Every structure is written in C-alpha cells, then in structure tokens.
Image (cartoon, rainbow, N blue to C red; front, side, top):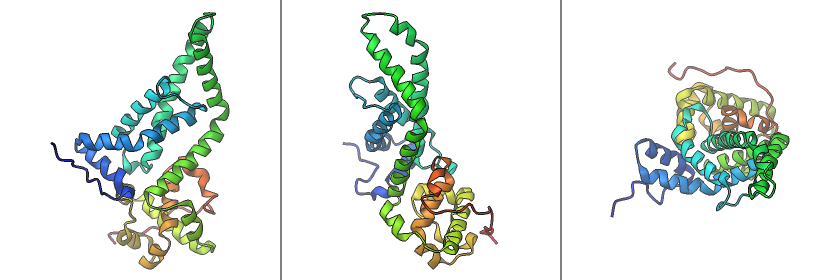
Length: 256
C-alpha cells in the first residue's frame, strides 16, 4: 500500500494551504483530498448561483461546478490575495455563466419543440439565467458573507470571536487597519499569510511600527481586515468591521 503524503491529523485550519502546496508538488492524493474537502461547498455554491436546488445526479450544473473546483485548484495563487474559497467561487461562477449563456443562445430552439422532453428543462435553464441576472447583487452579497465566514474559519476565527474582539476605540481600529494594510501590500507577507494562515508577527512588527503585544491582542481583527482588504469580493464587509476608509501607506521598510 502506498504511503499517504498528507498527514491525516493535520490541523484543519492550515489544511487547505498545506494541501495546495502538496498539489503544486504533484501530489495526486493531496488533490483528491482537497476535492473531497471542498466538494459539498462547491455544490452549495453552484446551487446558490443558480438560485435553485440542484440534483447532483441529473443537473449539468453540478458536474460543471466540480470541474471548476479542479480548475480552481490548478489556478489558485495565494500571492494574489484572495482566499482559496473565494477563488473557487469565482471559477464556479464564471463557468456557470458560460454555461447559462450557451444554453440561452439555444433556448428558442428547445422551446419551439412542443411536446419535446427538453421543453421544461429549457424553461428551467432560462429561468435560472433570469434569476441569476435579477438577483445577482443580493445573492453575491450573501455568498460573499458566507465565503468571509468560511475564510475566517480557516484562521480558526468565528464571527462571534470577531465581534467580541473588535476594538471599540477608533484610534485602535486605525492602528490595526494600518497593520492589515502593511500585511496585504507586501507581496511576500501576503503570500505567507494566506498560505500558513498565521500572522507573520515579527515582520509585521517591523513594517507597521506596532508592538508585538498590540498585534497579538488585535490578531483576530487584523486577520479579518487583511481578508477584506486583499479581496474586492469582500468590500461591503468593511461596514461590518466598522472600518473607515484610511489613507494608504504608513508602512516601513522591513529591512530598514
């Protein structure tokens, strides 16, 4: 029996980052495990995008979502600043939009066939497309919030944790915002942050000018801010974090 290269007891908060690294090294078992871990989430994303329940045994959208998940594993780049869950959602959404558009082009051909068994299916597909168009903004906000919660969970943080640990004073929030900016704007620190699911405290202390104690105390809030700042998908979450738009900059050279 071949040895498993992915340890089963690994901390789940770091799991996807570790598995993605193993996939890049050509580890087939790591890919299979990653697909298994994200399978149900990918199908749920597809159902949300289609605005209807999906039958995984009959709906093409389910197969498209799983193919897109595999594509997302290959195309994910942590240095781009997006969480893996967000990247998966974007790829699934793009592939389903392509699918909707292909089906929409042929909708009248299908619908003209009275009594054709494809008629109801064609109507259902067109309805999905219209629902996607009309409800897109509200659904994407809901999905983005779900992705934000999932991404926080990758860092072992819950929404309740975040609410309880968020600073009450604007000055403190401003300082932690600056630390998050420094983290996100430094390509190496950003890549390490999303890959390891850990704050690089030593380097962040150097570039932000804040003490390690301040960073450790504000860790959960900084993590949440960094997730939001790194990905425009989460822009609306800034209001949830009581974030005022701050000026860019204020970061030091970590080598200085």
